Structures are given as C-alpha cells and as structure tokens.
Image (cartoon, rainbow, N blue to C red):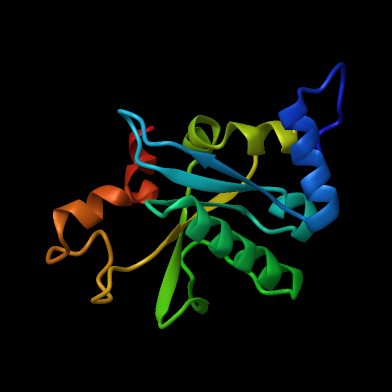
Length: 158
C-alpha cells in the first residue's frame, strides 16, 4: 500500500479506510468524450495479490456488485488473470478478463496507481450481451460494442 507523505484528501482517506475494512474501494468514472462510463477497483492488489479490475458500460450499482464479487472470490483464493474466463460472477453469463497496459492503467485508473505507489497490474472484466456475444464479435450490436472498448486490442497503440 502507498506510503503516505503529507496531508491526505478526504477521498484518499476514504480509499484507505475502505481497503483496510473490506479489502477494496470502487471508483466510478462518468462518461467522457474519450471513454464510456466505467468503474474500477483500488485495493485488490494490496488485499488479495490480485490485479485491479476495470469494467466498462455498467451502471454504478451493477459495477459495484460485480467488482465486490471479484473481491469476494479473490478473498477465497480464486484468481482472475488475463485471458481467463469465469462463470458465476454474472448470473447465467461468463465473463472474460483482458490485459490492461500500464499506460491505460495510468490513464484510466489513477487512484489505483496512487494507492499502490506506482505501476500496478490490472485486468479488464468484459461481459457479453444478452445473446452471449462479446464486444469484439462481428455480429454484436454497435451500441453494445461502444459501451465496452476492449483495452487489450489497443495496448499496442500506446
């Protein structure tokens, strides 16, 4: 966990309290011109030796529930590594985990970088549409694909 120097903001204090009490803090980021709505974890690395997780396109309550489920599973020793697929986190649907480059982590997950004192590993949790299609598949609706930019595809561009 980040060695603290100087005064902390109320938000930074809350992040550290949440990590100490429940193992994870969840940050929600509103849609911008560059990125859709997304949420990410802070603390999975410290609490569970698990990469931090980012998820796009879900309402904040659904994203919170999903990231909390990842933390619960990580607390039980389950691993969520890049390239893996897991059942049971979403009702009746598998999810996949993709690599997030360090440049994208720095851009999209600054509070996780702060809390971990620098570079931190992260994975993107990718969820399918109601027909079980992934955002990168040709037959998926464009609007659905737009909710979830798949960061792994863009890692070579940064």
